[in-house]
Image (cartoon, rainbow, N blue to C red; front, side, top):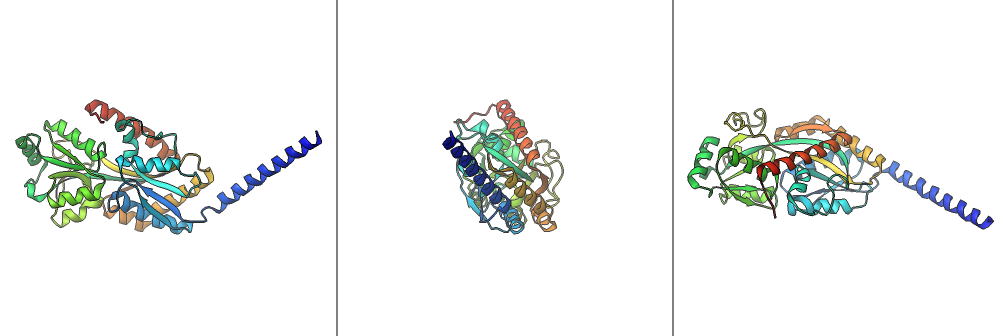
Length: 324
C-alpha cells in the first residue's frame, strides 16, 4: 500500500511538472518562427495578404512568420495538413472563402471544416472584379452578355479552381443572365491571371487586390465590381447592380490554427492580429489594393465560418451545381 501511495504521488508530481512546463511554454510563446500556410500559389491574393499581415504579426510577437504555399485541390491539401499539424501555435493558416465552400464541393474531404480547427481571427474581404481581356472587345456587362449569347457557350472564363468562389459566382451570373460560358479552372490566381493577360481565356472574376495594376495598365478591362458600392480604388467601374445584375461576392480571409491549440496561444495570436489590423499602414496597404479590413475576434470568426458554410451549401444546392 505504501508503495502504491508513493507511486501515485510520484505520478501526480510528474503530471504537475509537465503541466507547469506546458504553461511556461505557452507563456513564452512564440520562441521560434511560425509557419503561415496558404492554399494557393505565390503571387495571388492570399500570398499578398499573408505577407502583409504575417510581417507585422511577426514583428509584434518577436518571431518571423514563414509563408508556405501548398496549392492544389481547391485548398484541401493545405487544410488537411493544418488539421494534422501539432496544435502548438507554430503552424497556422490564412484561409479564404474556399474553407466554407469546400464541404459542399468535395466529397469525403479528410477533415471537418468546423471541428478540426480553432479560429484565430478574421482579416477582411476583397470584392470580386469582373475583368476581360481587351482583345475580347467588350466594355460593359451588357456587351459581355451579348457576346456570350452570340458564342453560344464558347466564351471562356477562368477561375482559381473547381468549386472556388469565382467559379460558383460566374455560374450564378451566367444563370441569371440566361447564358452559358465555358469554365477553365486553374490551380490558383496567378496562373489564371497570366492566361487572361495572354488572351488564352476571355474573362475572369478576380479581385482588385491582384488585378488593379493590370486594369490600370490596360491589360484588363474591368466591366463591373461585385460589391454594394463602387470601390475607391476603381471608382469608374460600375457595380453589378448598376449593370442590371445584383450579384455580390468577395474573397474573405482569416487565420486558423489546428483544433486543440491552447487558448493562451490563440489569445496571443488573436491580439497580434487585431493589433496588426489597427495599424494605419496595414489598413492603407490593403485598402489601396481594394481589400476591406474587417477585424473579427476568434469567437466571431468561428461563428462566421459556420454561417458561410451553411450559405454556400444552399447556393450550390439551389444552383443545381454538381461536382465529381
